[in-house]
Image 1 (cartoon, rainbow, N blue to C red):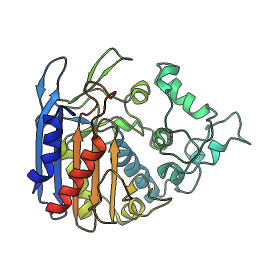
Image 2: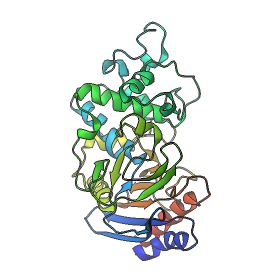
Image 3: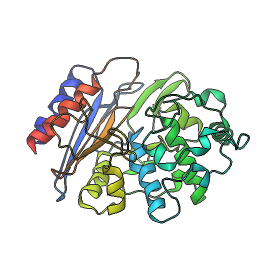
Length: 331
């Protein structure tokens, strides 16, 4: 079954569109299969990809780490998702308490990307001190815009979590195969970064995350394909979540957005064959995770499509869609 589903990734590797890929499929009853092929790195030294390599999960950090931890705080009664972020960050826009729209944003707003905040901002260009940059995020008067998928939402959620718990995100425990970087094993290379002047390997690809210390609400998590599958199985069989959290991540808040995740919609990265009860998320480095609750199956496709540069067309959308459709067809 998984061989047919992995065929599109093998073709993309053979055609030179991506260096390497790993596909993992897991069922609610615990059955799983993994395939991998290609290269963990092309430059500066070639390195063959193995099942034990750690991928920079990029924005999968938003759902595997941040969403899970924020929902756990809500279930414990330490926050109310419909209360403003100022319950955790009272100094948010502290110089304009009466008028700042940021002070009215709720935890649920940020989880569902239901805010006026921009998609992204080159925060790393404003300095290199993580504490100062966190202050910049909190005190900046952000330009208002339409509801968009926004890294800033999750950077703020990460800061809120750190304030509430008194510990950095990097101190949070995860299961085997998931960790904030640097990972405790061989790492997949990402980009030859012009800002840092080197090929990134075992350090976070996202510039803002790196400048903010390497572990933020929007990025910084690394994982092996088995580690990501363990997380997926915990959602499928209930061992790694609770009814409260499952309801939150499966219930739409606006359009196809739930708390952290997105549900199936026309043209999404998860393909057309999955059921309407499928949630998923992707990461910029070439990662993705999808959970079909109706069929009791989850799959993760991990690639290093930004290696050695993001500035080329890799066909990642089509690859994700064809892979997802093939996984469902063979299930």
